[in-house]
Length: 162
Image (cartoon, rainbow, N blue to C red; front, side):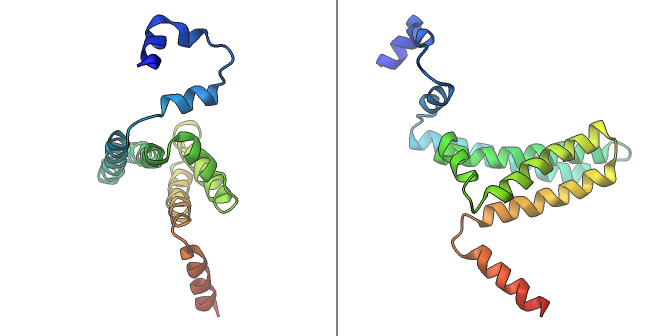
């Protein structure tokens, strides 16, 4: 209640000693039920956007652009959904762990490059390549949260290569 009073009275905005990270952390103090609802909503929106993007792929001329936009937005929403469960700061820290840093970097780079290839460079073949890399990097990133799965996949690939 004190927090609400300080926000409504304007005292909250006058605190200059507060950093941006502290403000974001304070803003993310949601109850568990709200976090689960936010996760489900973002995850469903992300899934619907990805499926809608695939369905729109077959529209002549603009289908590829709609696919790229909806699919990329869907991946962003799906990634943001996990921030509801853990909180934004904890999620960002986990994304930058040494086991996930490369996958996170590739995933975010591919998200940006997909949109650049579609809208700035107008190279749809390259955009589709970046979408494929998005899928692979997002999958590899997601698997990093399941203990020992990535190691098992690497061993399986190594056995198949022999």
